[in-house]
Image (cartoon, rainbow over all chains, first blue to last red; front, side):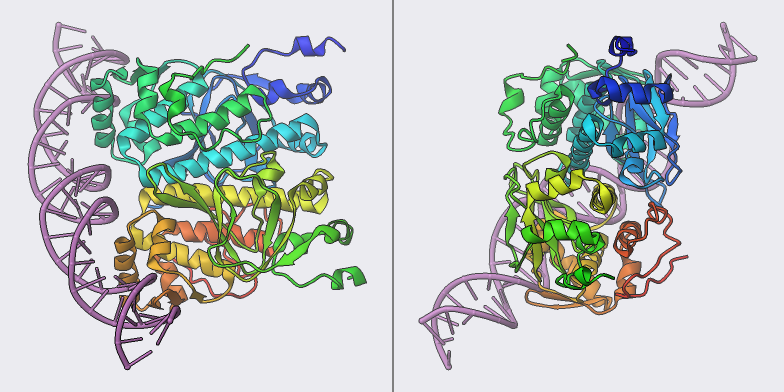
Length: 265
Length: 265
DNA sequence: TCTCTCGTGTACTATATCGTACATAAAGAG
DNA sequence: CTCTTTATGTACGATATAGTACACGAGAGA
């Protein structure tokens, strides 16, 4: 039983990877590695949270749906965190439609199992709380960004945040889909995407967007990306940096090209 | 029930009021009841969180400041919760400027004391986690609202949310201030406020806005208000309703009778 | 191969909001 | 009471995005 840590199936998920051997052993029997599909809906708006999901190179969107039929993405979940957080916080229903955007597998577990383990304290609790803070920061930055920045800037930010989570420069996404995420017209996305492509930052064909100039895209994106990225790096690196990098990022960071989005080792 | 509980200084704050006698006794020596001032800044952006604050009929704004000098409110804290939450979640610095909007006192306590008590579990932990979820919902709704709704609708929502927290129809606010909260021009606020006043929903003089028709204002506001209000009611009523009211606007309950909620069927 | 569907490109008007500037009125200071 | 500051009212061109509509072409299926 002491070789259990070595027996863990490999995953990028930072929550799972942070667990102590003891914690992992308790949870392992309930953990199930599944494949996910593009567009798959984990929870409908207001649906009971039965399972929580730990993405592995999968990107999940939290979408707020308005009564006029429009929709806006209000948060993103990747390997840095988990879908189904409200359950841990004491709410059994998901306030947002939770949708798999880019799929490459995930682990899942009955929500109540996670909550029990969470209540024990320990590394899991610490990691989940820290993740909660990072999601809160992400969402609040999206709130500000939606008010302050142009469609093109937001599109750039969105593509970057997606790539950070799916770890691939190739994103299988249509303009139609992006328009739902950004809360703009489909035609608006096309125009913005054309602008980014004209700058040589991205290249796309039907239903597939490729980031061709990552650093350029970072410069093009609004400051919101750098803010959220600093927090994302804090959480994914496992460093308890206490949010020191959250703000006060004056563009100097990506000007010098300091972005290593791959730190898996 | 016990004599101890009767000895608590009265406050509207739901976190403090939820505590068990035992918990309260442990925290009481560190608790300090202070007065707050309009415009007082509890934490600057990125500032160390030394104390956490439990508002009592005080309304506190979480403000995201953009590099272009603009600012947008991304969250609100009232007697339903607490300022300084990031500290509990493991981050020692406040990612947002945290400002007293409408003042009527608060209790405060060294942040580390609260964190220690939080780790013990118990009612405090449960209440704070539940509150965290409600703040997350608030912020995400603001994100969607900022993308989808007009200045007038958002102004109406903002005024309502403020009144819910300061429990007074009289809000000491200038258009200039509101423009920072809503992230629009000052002139834009004036126009929107004129529209609301023309409808007889509010009445204002220099630096003072009065809600004259609460129900009308609720109808005027976008759906976002009702969503957040349902969650707010859940949290403030102490019911562990587990978010059932978050999106189902159909089940309003009016906890402490601030107003009647007309049902928009 | 042909056809049909879907993703994308583009155009045009309408509207909300911006940026800016200036006028006016109310409250406070002396 | 007068002066000064501050909050509010208003205007006007500029701009971003909405709403809508239609054409084009790639790719999938028959």
